[in-house]
Length: 130
Ligand code: THU
Image (cartoon, rainbow, N blue to C red; front, side):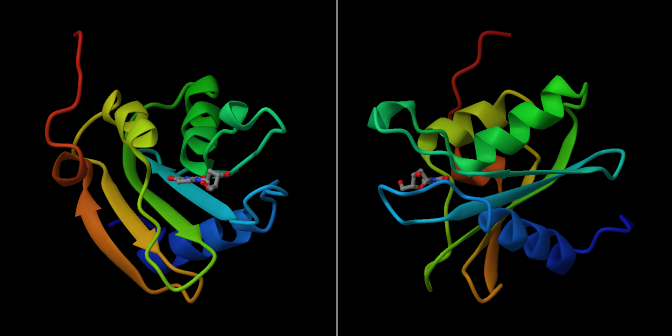
């Protein structure tokens, strides 16, 4: 059993959301990624005046983990402003799929309520080269 509960991981995502740089959409997203060795990497969305340069919270968290030598992921929590459960975009699903389809995805709203799926459920036909 991981020492990090789902509730605590969602809380970490909600806190990470506070760092969002989202002056254009005003839609703040936070992510918290739990690795196999029980470390947590967080991320927030970082927007840009050249809109397509924007990066999502989930990819920031994944790239922080990978650049720290971690690529075995148990769970990712994603939390955004508003009532809706925040679902990772297709690009983020593809990036997560690179590291395994068993990763649990917790999709939360600003109140901390969430729904859970596996990555395989969200992206059943991921592109793969290896
Ligand atoms: N966004 C994320 O951070 N994660 C997602 O999975 C979907 C969208 C961000 C990107 C942009 O800054 C804002 O939400 C609106 O699309």
